Length: 502
Image (cartoon, rainbow, N blue to C red):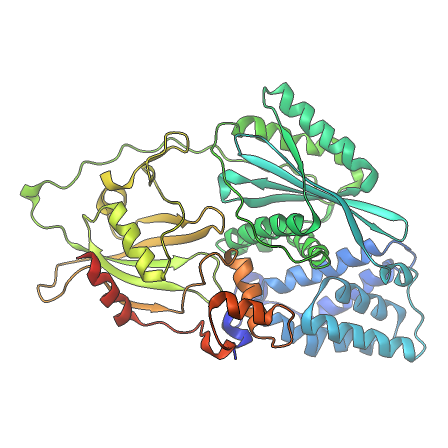
């Protein structure tokens, strides 16, 4: 059986923001906030409050679910008040799994005990449907906007997710506005693009495709946020505009779980040609959302700085190149998935691509690129700005200890690898290179939908009662979930496989 903790971040969070974490104070503050909701009949406000709590909890890692189920939810129930019941309903509306079940059960007990339900409770229990899902994009492919309108009990609200395809397809910002204003918002974006000389196109999406594209963008953003968690901590709540991106992402993920499961097609990424116009279009969103948006800042699509001039290759007269000890980690993976490799410093990036493919068990059936301070290298492509990886060596783009570069494989699933030069070593005359000296955990299966898809795959395999359990086993070619071991890794086996490259 696949263990749930395979996707957990081990150990408690020791970040500065969490070191002084006071659960009791947070509980009291949340219940006070819930009391302010009691006069509202719109359940969306409660959902946003619940999303804010879960966003704070994400900073503590997956261990927060245990704290939620074993601490926060019982504490809300112990209030035995309508405000405590409101908080339980808020948490249950945007959580899933154990937390959702515990919150629902606790809320049910309070109702049975005679605690009056908040005004929004009846509407919160009504079904939510989605309509008008679409993707507005610039044909060059630098940006897109995913939008859909959700309906419940006669109300509607629209969600707009901006996506920066020059930033790994990551979500930029999430806007929430009245459903009736969505056509106006999209029209403003199109007009601003046109004013900047950029044509746009719009495609309709079915609910499953809309879910997959949104979840993919959120997952890419999450992987980036994990690299700078302190910056994320400082942007949970904005006093003027309400919940910031982390809380909005929790709410949107909850909405996506209501939609049909996607078939996971592989979306394509574009180049940077329309980046400036794309930025102008996204900035236009701030003009149409007004006070009804909870997140009004535009996405900053950063212009890429000019690449530095590539240093000259090693001369033969300089003698044999040293050996680089590399740590190659899959960005955003929890727990970490990484390999420690030793390769000649003058290995070409094309050959390093082969090494990484073998080390992670990839099948080399998708596009790839190395992002370096000296430009992008992969299969030569003038439109994408990719220079030939065969013409550059590792020591040219990573000249010393602590040098870093990024390797992305499969522009649909976006498997991003962070490569760090840990140490420069003298050659060992008794060793053969390249070789693997360490690592942790098996890499995800090819074409499983990126990190988000991998998380779903593990969850499905871990649940024999899941409707897709047998289908996913068949897809993997396995007889049972016990045959799938995400914790497995064999450095010697990788080194043996790398011998084919020598």
